[in-house]
Every structure is written in structure tokens, then in C-alpha cells.
Length: 219
Length: 229
Image 1 (cartoon, one colour):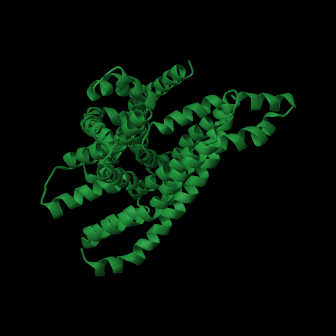
Image 2 (cartoon, helix red, strand yellow):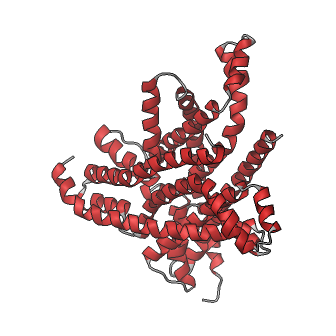
Image 3 (tube, each protein chain N blue to C red):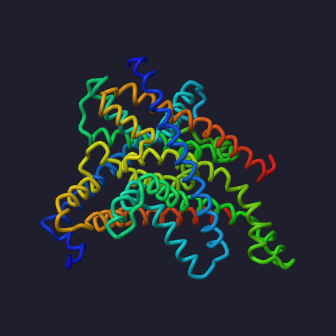
């Protein structure tokens, strides 16, 4: 392993680092939005829409991201939907993440005590008001650890973007290995780069889990 | 183009080749799950011991496999084992090894949290009626923690199966790699080959993983029913 090679490679990896972060962020925000919508539909048992939501969750939770991306990026253009690699990546990550987030939110919503919901109904709240003032504030709190775990999972999944040639971290490392045989150096930087993003998040997750337990059980 | 794209599966032995590729993925997943589960149970039990050093080392092992994406783990082993350790393994063996070690890491955490969840009064009661440590484990700790471990283990198994989609990256002839070859070989005749082939592989993975998801939910519900009386 050569330190000079590592030093020289840092700028190109820094660029890739930001791409990984940026696409992760888009994907995570998209996943949370999709997740909240699908979980609320499921919670309020909206006819037909709940069915579609359930099918969506099962389809995307039970298939790998790689094949989802291949389908979006290579197969959809053949039937008339052509989108760029980056957009395909974010759409794939959002669809995958949305199905995981929906389960996480639903777990939290179902944890909200029945009495709370019944009281809300008794004072004449509409479903939208119930969601806004009763279910979301209480439910999201208990689903925070699951959401944080999903965030870590989604960031790791961006490494699969390499298969549709998005120049994120993993793709950049493979490029460096392929072009210059800088195998050890590239893999070393790659592991460090993921560690920089994920170790703080992992520590945050542990802390959140402890906090939420205290909120839920008061100890 | 008047004929339907679905015919791409009936050209030559395309469909059989795809299924053969799926078998390669399934074999790697199966061996990795069995090896990983055995190692994971041992490591999980070790993580409940009093030795701080053992616990620390196993924690580092878990965190490493948890933080590094599986794609990167595959490349680490694929490139570094032959280059720096002079160990020339086939891509299939490297993949099995990586998946087994990853499964073991995650499994150790499931086993550990299952074991420590058994209330202390249960083991105390066991000791009071004169059970030895082996009996204590066999009749008190194991049966009570097993119920908690089963849904999480099924979920992990499903994750390993989905991760076999990455085999393509280290040139294993898995179902996706075969699919790519079929799409390229039939490009002239079937312009929408990718749609059908990737669509089928998507469905194949779903068929493998959906029953596991149903089983996991069933077991989790059963466990919740016992807990709530």
C-alpha cells in the first residue's frame, strides 16, 4: 500500500463521497415521504389504495435493489421510459426505501394506544386531523429507531449504484482498480469513506434506541 | 416486430439456463446460511460470556460486517485474499465465505439479544431446582430465547438470498449474469429482451423471498399472541 497513491486519490474519492451522500439524501427523503403516505393509507384502511400499498410493500421488500435498478435503467427505456442513471438510482432507492419505511412507520402507528385514537374520534377529529395531531406525533416517536436503521441500510445500498455506472464511492474504487491496479489503496479509502458516514450514524442509532425506550417505558 | 418479447425464453435453452443460474445463486445462499447460522450461534453464545476481551473482539467483528456494505465486502475478499494472502479461491467460494461471515455476524447479534432477554428469575429458578449449566441452557434459556430468535433469523435468511444478486459483480454465473448474456445474444431479434428477462428475474426473487416474509410475520404474530396471553 502506498501513501502517495492514497494522497493522490483523495480528491477523486472526495467527489464520489459527495455523490454518495447527495444521492443517499434524496433517496432517504423520498423514502420517508413514500413511507408516510403508504403507512397512513394502510393505517386508515383506505379501500383499494391499501391493497395497492400492501402489494407495493411486499414486491419491493422481497426483491433485491440490483434487479430493481436493472429493471428501471435497462428495461423501462425499452417500453418508452428513458431516465438517466442518477435519477434511476434515486427512484430505485426511494421505491425500495419507501417499502421499508412504510413498515417502520406502520409499526409506530400501531403502537399508538387505542384509547388515544378513540378519544380523538370522540371529540370529532377527522381522519386527517387524527393523523396530524394524534397518530403522527406519537407514532413517529416510537418508530425512530427503525427509521434510523433503515437510513443506514439505504446508505449502504447506494454501493449497488455502481452497476448502473453512477460514479459514487464503490464505482470510483472499482474504476481506480481497473485503470491503475491501485487495489489496496482504493479498497482502503473505500472502507474508510463508508466508516466516516456510517459509524456516527450507527452510534446515533444506539443512542436513539435507548432514548426511545426511555420515552416508551419511562426508565 | 410482430412476435411477443416473451418468446425470448423459448429461444434455445434460455429458460433452462436462467433456472440453472438461479440454482447457482440458491446453492451459494444455502451453504452460506447453514455455515453462517452455526458460526453465528456459537459467536452469539460467546458474546454473553463474562470475558470482556472476547466480547469486545466479537463486537468489533459484528460492527465491521455491519458498517461495510456487502458489495464492498465481496470486493475486499475477492481482491485481497489472492493478492495479499496468496489464496486463490474461485469466485463462488469467495462469495460463500463472505455471505457466511456476514450471516454469522448478524446471527450472533440475534442470538445474543435472544439469550439476554430471558428474565433472570427463570435461570435463578432453574438453579434452585438443581439444574447444571448444560441443563439450564437446554431446558430454560434455549427454549425461551428461540421463540424470539426465529422471526429475526427468517428475515436474515431472506436478506442473504436477496444479496446473492450481487454475485454478478465478482463474475459468478448467477441468474442475473446469465440473464445479461441472454439479453445480449438475442439483441437483434428481441429489442425489449431486458424488459422480459429482468422482469422474470424480479419475479423469481419475489417467489423465493415472499414465502419467507409470510412465515416471518406468522411467527412474529404467534410470539406476540403468547406474550399477551
